[in-house]
Length: 252
Image: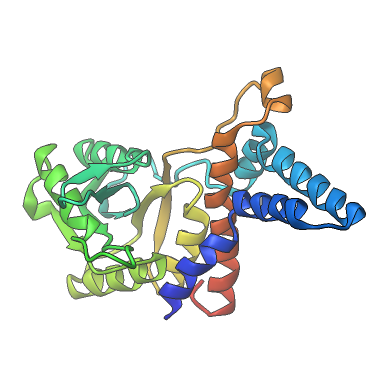
């Protein structure tokens, strides 16, 4: 039930939907004063949530920007969180824009920083039954030269909390010693770290797939609206609200 509610909530926290709703109210409202207010509100939200500078600065302050790896130290397991791939209607797997999670995990393994890789991710699709994302990732890891014996798979989890609890079951059953390297997108790691620590796993962060980076801004970043940035706010707000909800429900 919690998983289904979280998916439904996501629709209502998207800035694009707020802007669209206010603009529709502007169109259908007959009162001229109220009509004008709805239009102004929609414009203000659009300008604010499409501003590259504002989003980048907020994400920089919120995300994990540095990894916790100790130079020269080897770790038993790197825990790779899903959210970087999916399946089409023919059940053919494809990587998404967050594939840097996969790339960084591969690098850590082949450099000898982590001995094993635990990929944790099932299917988050509410409508269609699909293979677990972890199944596809395991195949790709093997193709990239990671031996099957060094891959641990958890393909039933649907959200971050289940990622953590199911991963702990596997790690405890194998009596593996922490700390463990937690690999995910930089914007997702603040919430993921809290959840994994809550279930009793000692983890250190390894951020990847950066949405925001320290950069020299151009005048366009301050002035011109960006539809890409407007869409990126979906993930930011989801993480902020998700952290609050997980805290209230005792999951983080």
